[in-house]
Amino acid sequence: MGVLPLKILCIGDIVGKPGRQVMAELLPSLIEREQIDLVVANAENAAGGSGLTPPLFEKILRTGVDICTLGDHTYRKREIMPILESSDRLIRPGNYPARATGKGWTVIQSRRGTAVAITQVMGRLHMNPIDDPFQAIDRILDEIPRAVRVRIVDFHAEASSEKIAMGWHLDGRVSINFGTHTHTPTADARVLPGGTAFVSDLGMTGPYESVLGRRKDRVLKHLLTGMPFFFEIATGDPRLCGILASVDESSGKALSVARCDLCGTERDGAYDADDGKGLPKN
Ligand SMILES: [Fe+2]
Ligand SMILES: [Fe+2]
Image (tube, rainbow, N blue to C red; front, side, top):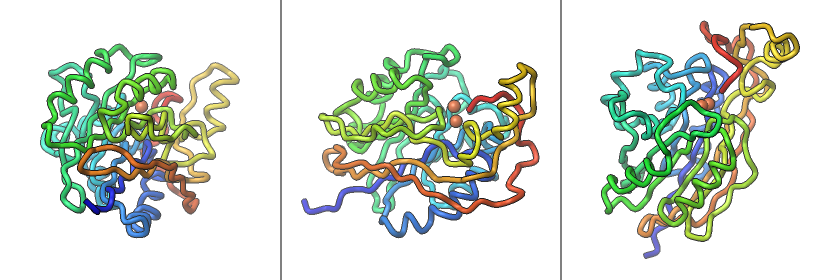
């Protein structure tokens, strides 16, 4: 008794170089100031807006992130495959086919030595076909050792209805359930009655003068003409977005949750060499 609650920071989709720069600029001091015990970040868009590479994964860990989750862009950069196999600090959605490279959950230690389980599943509404995330998360939660009371779920999904339903499905069974993928922060962060800290979407960590991180002029050209255009990563108005939750480590229940959205410094020349490939999607 008398142990201070664990402070866990969950950071939304890091998009391209502006996202990585704002992490390096703001995260170390935030960890220090708020005495944060564990940092989870979604890194599916870290490399040029789609996927993650080994050097960028290492860079993100050096900013203070303890564990990265991915999403529908997991396999965009094939060079991440060996890390997906070997690292306990990188997971992909657990409802991919069982033969897919990587793992859907992991257990790591917080800065003060508390075991914390992190898992991720992906939604089905307006997403590519994938196994039922509700059944998958039930299976995963059964697989995690019972002694691990602090449990975090990233639900990577498009529709807020599906995300809110997942929040109720998990209420009282996990410490934190946050949503990722839409790149738009939602204002519904709250602790559900069973003790699960919930938010529909963490929002993007990247340039907000954009359409989901891509240059707004390029996306508008596409929408106004129906013609394909190259969607470079934008640079304006970089922000770090997510939630900060406190969790009782003995019960695994969340005690509080608040949005944590911070503005960074805009930089010129923040483009990646391969930014802009692909569609106007997150
Ligand atoms: Fe996504
Ligand atoms: Fe994303």
